[in-house]
Structure formats: structure tokens, C-alpha cells
Amino acid sequence: MSEEDTGAPHFATGAEVEALLDKYARDRVGAHTRMQCKVCWYVYNPDEGCPEEAIDPGTPFLDLPDDFVCPDCGHPKTAFLPLDDDQIDPSDPSGPAQGWSDRWEHG
Image (cartoon, rainbow, N blue to C red; front, side):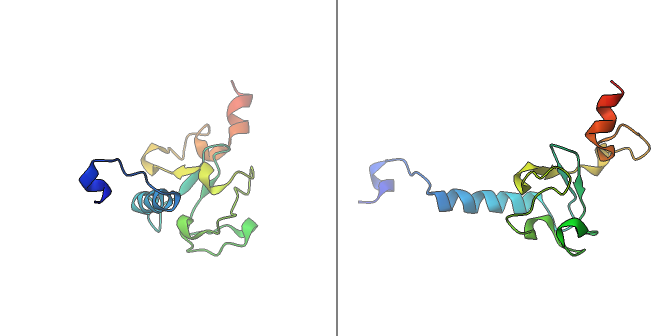
């Protein structure tokens, strides 16, 4: 008799959870999606790569090495979120792309 026949719940293995999270990340983050560090506001742009970390232009965020860290603050890839370009006003000097230190000095 299988678990389905007995009505017992199925508990996902660590590998199953990791595979599902990877799938959801890949569905949400495309090859050209810019990613922003939620700690320091650094923006990773796949079209530019990351010269500080020897990442070539054209490298999607999800293809970065597992040990990639934010070049500005050192936090891991898990600290990055997809950047919604519609919420960015490049003419606003207090916008996220300007960095956190600029924001707090004025407040």
C-alpha cells in the first residue's frame, strides 16, 4: 500500500524542496532580469556582468557561482531580489540605485 492509499501526508525531502525553489526562482528571474541587493541596494545587471567578481557580461543572475557575494556589502545571492524597473525613477537622487549612505545622511 502506498502513502496515497493510506492518506498519510507526504513530506518533501530537502532535495525536492531545493528543486522546487530553484524552479520558482528560474520562473521569476529571467536571463535579463536585473537583481538588487536588499541590504545595500547594489544592482546586478546581467548585461554588464560584475567586473569586481570576474563575472562576464551576459551572465544571468541564476548562472552566477553559488559563492557569489555582493561586491558592495558581501552578502550572498540570497540577499538579492528581482528589480522592478517600473519603480525606479533615474532622476530621483534618493532612489535605490544611489546607495543607502546617501539616503540616511539627509534624513
